[in-house]
Structure formats: structure tokens, C-alpha cells
Image 1 (tube, rainbow, N blue to C red):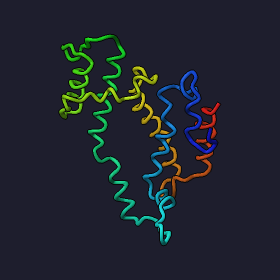
Image 2 (cartoon, rainbow, N blue to C red):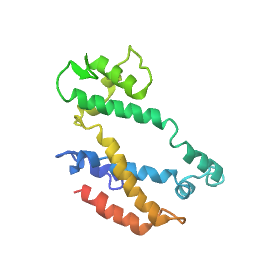
Image 3 (tube, rainbow, N blue to C red):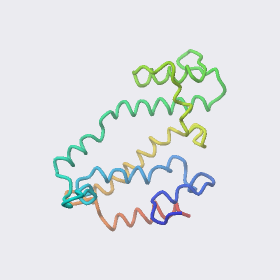
Image 4 (cartoon, rainbow, N blue to C red):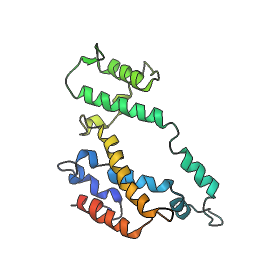
Length: 186
């Protein structure tokens, strides 16, 4: 077990990995993902292999602007999968959706097309390679979006503290470690 991994606390197995509620499980990692999009963090993390210079500001700004490219498609796909997960864990098929009955494969295609607005490949059934419904997330895949909300609230505290200066506040970072990460390690 790594003492340096932020996620080492998360997979101890009972009652839910890390002993945290399912809709909180992803919060620490999701909150930390926000830092890499910030100029002051990218400057510290990036170095040119030859001269040691950080990424230019224009490149950093372009990266930050690209963060939400295709977000609508990704979010609608996620919501369709979360709804699918809830539906298939609510009983055995056939499954009722919008007044029609579907088997598991047809339900996936109907929900994905309806919610994302994009056609699916009728010969594919991506659910067969989707790990979450079989690993204990039973009807809980929706929890990722709730985790994102909690993570955004946590990160907002760093943004408030940093203001125009920096979000890299040691005191707030220690508070995050002590109140969020440490209790989850027990």
C-alpha cells in the first residue's frame, strides 16, 4: 500500500471501499483534478526536457480552454448510462422506458439515443465491457455526478482562498488532508 498515493485510502474493501459512502468515493480525486487546469500549477508541473522552461502562458490558456470540449456529449452519455444502471437494477426485464418494453440491449440503445441525441451502433452493446454495474456500484453509477458536485464545492474553497494570488495555499491544503483524506484512511 502506497503511503504517497492519494487513492491508497480508497480500496480497503469494507463496507464500501475505504469505508466512505459510495457517492463520496470519487470526491478527492475529482477535486484534485481541478488543480491541473490552473496556470500556477501547470507552470510548476511542466518543464521542457532540454531547457527546463515551463509551458508558455498561451499554451496553458489553450489547455485550460480545451477542458470542456465535447462536455455536452460526454455528460449526456454519462447520464444515459446512469439511468440505464438504475433501470436494470430496479428489476428483471423486459424494462419499461417511455411506455415501451425493451430487453437489456434495446434499452441501452433507446436510452443512449434518446438522452444523447446521437445514434448508436446497432451491432454494439458497450454495457458488456462496462465494469461498474458488476463491481458493486449496483444502481449507483449516478454517484459520479454527485461526487463532481461535492468536489466542485471543495475546490471552490481553494479558489476563494487563492483569489488573484494562488490556489496553492498550504494551510488550506493541510486542512483538506486532515479533514477529507485522513479520516478516509482509517
